[in-house]
Length: 327
Image (cartoon, rainbow, N blue to C red; front, top):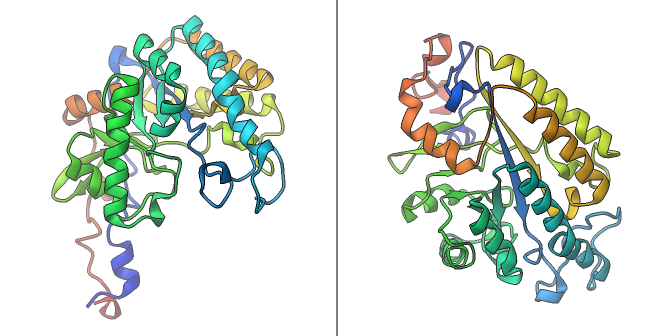
């Protein structure tokens, strides 16, 4: 019999593409695929105003969540929906860049004009839940029902059903199985494990993971995090881009930048984002793309990508004899 420790780690992959790596080909032989992700959560967060019996974690202030309605914190989210999102809209329209929305259905319901922009501009939606809630606390059937509610709502507000999924972290132990059972998802982004997409086996099927990033993410502007000002964000993005672009001469990679209208939509921070985007756009060999495009490309092309066998390819975790005490 397996020990609890052995059963809990049996599905982890600490090898990935190994020492030799994978050499994918992006459209146009791009060195790096840059994916801009807007997390649209405004109006779907926890709030006493919505009967949750709790508030969302303070966004721009360094104090503990209050046991009463937090009107100030609510307005930080409102800024994202009222002002920040339209500053980003003007920027991305001007630069003619595609965007993926990791959006909550309830947030789109409360601001239908955002869904209208998504349809007009041809952006795509990666479902972020019906609300911005911790799905890991839900039982399996409740999570399934919320998933179906989110699909139906986003299809109505944004014009198409979502083909990707990203949980408010952490995902539950049921999330990935529910996605595969529903049948309409091409990928999920509930992983931070790689710079490239990869497949996992779920219910006997190959399911695609397009990893997300908490590293290149404006969430670091929050109190106690690592960005003290816009220049920090700009420097972080430029250094990451430069390294990936150089590395992409032989091993193309993916670069994801996570954005939130209530955070990056503030003027000084938006200025830093725009400066980075203009910098990256001045380079050859850059594919600005949506997560849906990455998933579709990977599904269609991944069997053609060179992968030199190395020690990392064998043995797998299932081939390695377990210690007697783990049996």
